[in-house]
Each structure stands twice: as structure tokens, then as C-alpha cells.
Length: 187
Image (cartoon, rainbow, N blue to C red; front, side):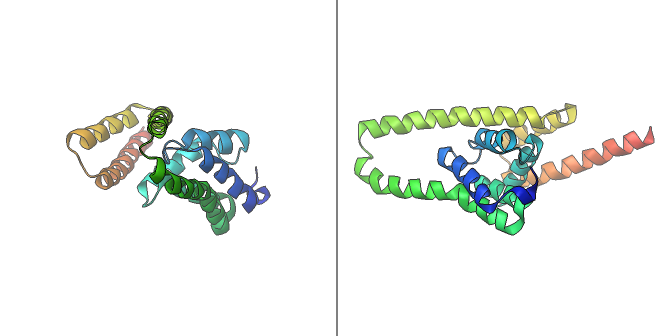
């Protein structure tokens, strides 16, 4: 769909509809964004969405808001970024305000405890699905698989700072891409 056909209101509503059904943060919203923006609206491609997720992880702030901001900006500029960002956070703000007002009174209720435990399990499943999709779309060859393994080792074994890991991954990715390009041009 052409960007000039996308209204600010439609950006707001699309991101609000994702925001209202997303529990578990930015990673959990990936399948909902794919369905809404890539499949239903066809505003962006799956590859674009993965790129926005990668960029959102490298920038400060909440992933969900960053992704909404990037997509909104791509579609309608600064006002689109604002509409999409407000759309994605509005449902959460409203829901959290209501829940926090009620939760204090019911936090020890066994039904509430069970419901929260159930939500946690579903969020884990949604996150596992999102991670599977990200891995499937991001690891496309031996080089990306090697970078993935190196990143896991540095993250879990050496406990390297995430920001440093992202910066090192950027440098490694650019370096390897340049080496591959040089080798291909030499042939």
C-alpha cells in the first residue's frame, strides 16, 4: 500500500490493536505485527519488520515503541511516528492504570495468582515463537550462523554487556560483509 494512502488514524488504530492484545513486551508483539502490518495491511514486508526489530534493539528505549516509531516514520514521517507510537502505548497505559488500581486489592487472591501464572506461560510461548521466527529469518548462511553462535557464547559464557555485544556484532557484520564483497570482486 502506498504511504500516502495510509492515514495517521489508520496507523494509530493498527498499532493500538496490536498494543491491546500484546502481553510480554516487544518480542511478544512480533507475530501480531506480522499479521497486522505484513499480511493484512501489506504496509511492510517481513524482511522490513525484522530490520526494524534489529534496529529497535540497538536503540535506547522500549522495543515496541521503537518499532512503532520506525514503521510510522517510514509510512508517514514524523507525524506517522507519533501516531504509531501513541497507538501502541495507549492500550497498555489504559490497561495498566486500571489493573494497578485493582491489583493492589486482589494481588493475594488465588484466582488472580493463577491467572497471572497462566499469562506468564502464554507470554513465554509467544516469545519462543518470536525467537524462532527471528532466528529462521536472520540465520541465512554459515556466516550468520557463526555470528549467532559467537554472540551466544559471548552473552552466556562471558557475560559480555549487551550494548558492547551489539556494537561488536555491527563491526563484525560490516567487516565480514566487506571481506565477502572483496573476495567476490576478486573472482
